[in-house]
Image (cartoon, rainbow, N blue to C red; front, side, top):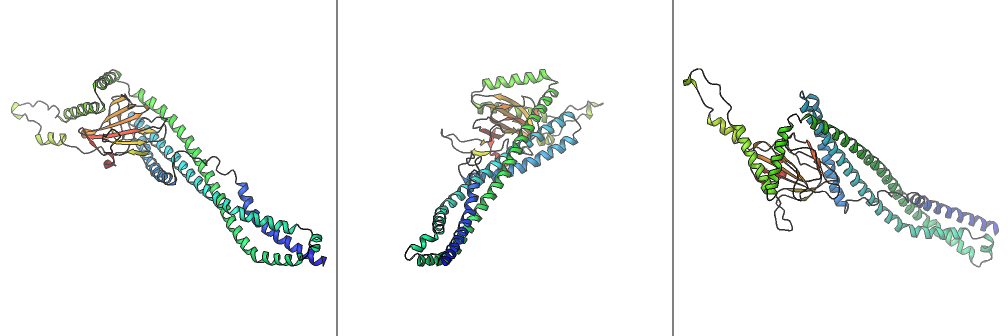
Length: 421
């Protein structure tokens, strides 16, 4: 009798240990990962998975575009023969690399946010499955630990033990199945942990690259400014004239209108025919054909190689109505703090500086009567009178909830910037 009871108890113990081992295989992994995503559980900047996915797609596209522009500018700098052209393309290449690093940081942040959401959902599933398995394992352990002597003196204990054994043998496959699902989910959690570690490494690498490139750009801009100040007296006169216009203009629209008119006058003067050498005989004199003059003055094609001045989420589109009932004449973009702002196209800086509640603004005259207005800058790296190429660095956004406004006008009339992309 005792031998039979001992054998039966040993079998029960083996069954209990088997079930317990299966359960602990799952929950041991959960316990080992209890600190998973401590650094990523509350990634700021996204209200939900949809917003994070949208930001991820936008940032990946921006990173690819910035990388392509950086390569193009680097090639142009290598092929430039003039020092001023080399410096301009090098600074534009660095600005594009900075925007690429900013996009890479946003990609990593969005990925961390999505991984953290997946982990929270997984934790909830594991917690839901924990209680039944823990209770079942505890019951099996209690039965397996009951001394044989006590079982022998309890009426019907042998019958109950045989019954419990039969029940365990039929339920053990179910226990194995459930714990197999648990192990699969725990392995999924470990995969998420590895993804998070890689993403964090990418984030740290992008942040280091961003700081390095910003330092390089600052040094290059200083060198560029020193090289372009050969005619400082003319630059000072032009800056004083622009400042006088800014002080006299009643609002931003009037200010941009003044520079639009000045740009049109400058274009008209540039389109005039040049002097013709006096002929030897008066009857051989001639004038520039009118058709050539009109062809020069009527070209209204938009600036080539157009791009938005900064990467970010669009807060207000062209024609949107604000709280005051005014329609937007451009775009309002929310970039990352301290984001790099670049020239949307080649042109001449007609104004750069602070202006009446709009932060620092930059007005750029492009060819054929087009004008760009960028507002909300915290710092500008160009000055009035500078010539810029498309993608040249013109300043940076603020550090606290920055908003960059952008308008482009054709002969003074607002145009949707998105139509030019």
